[in-house]
Amino acid sequence: MGFIHLWLTIQSIVIILVSINRLGSFTLGYVAQNEFLRWVDFNNMLVLPLMSIVAFYLLKKQVEYDNPRQNSGAHLALNLAFIIGIYLLGAGYGNHEVTNYLHTRFCSAGETNSLCRIIVFNDDEFSHWVFFIGFVLVNAALMLLQVLFPRTQPLVRQDAVLLAVNGLFIGAGIFANLAFEVIGIDLYVVASLAFLALWLLWKRGPQPLLVYYTVAYSLGLIGTAVYKLIG
Image 1 (tube, rainbow, N blue to C red):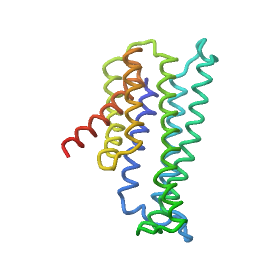
Image 2 (tube, rainbow, N blue to C red):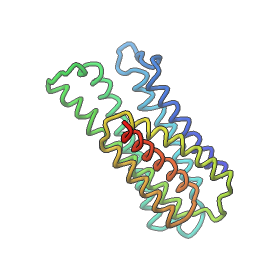
Image 3 (cartoon, rainbow, N blue to C red):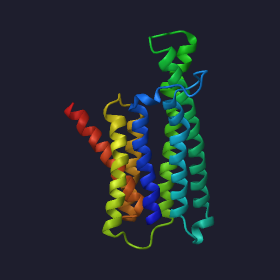
Image 4 (cartoon, helix red, strand yellow):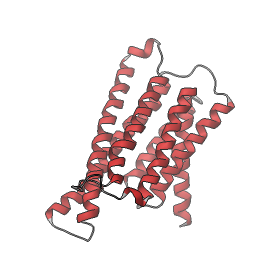
């Protein structure tokens, strides 16, 4: 459990760094003299996602252990889903950050020429679809791997609390992205993962990643719903 808490804590740190990166004015400078990207775009495309994916991979390896299911068809399918998800996450990040920078810099004043229409479509729609498909695959694969390789020892209270605390950080990130934005496909993505986590938790009991994902996505979703209703 110690390493599981470590990799989940790194995800929480990434959420904090993402917020600092987006909100801090010190990341608006250009990476190079040719002004190909700002630091905010560079960090969002390369530095922070790499930290997150490495932690996800190490978490995956921590959940898996040597048993007859190690070489099963289900294990192979979930590994493929995880790998495909990582690729799509990278493709979505790369497309979004570059076109978001170009959109903000050259097309934010209502430009309607062909180039800007292509940039805006990639920024606001296509990159989001690619990213969210990858996001669902990676996170669903981790939950299902936890089911395939269940922890045999019951969770103690301290572990449950630590899982919930790290889940709260992710839930806060979900709330920040949903509550203050026009809701689109991201709401359905979060709702589907929350439903999957709750269903697996009900069917399989308090497995570590199921507790973590249930707290993160359910609280993020509930917080957003309450905020929108009050607003």
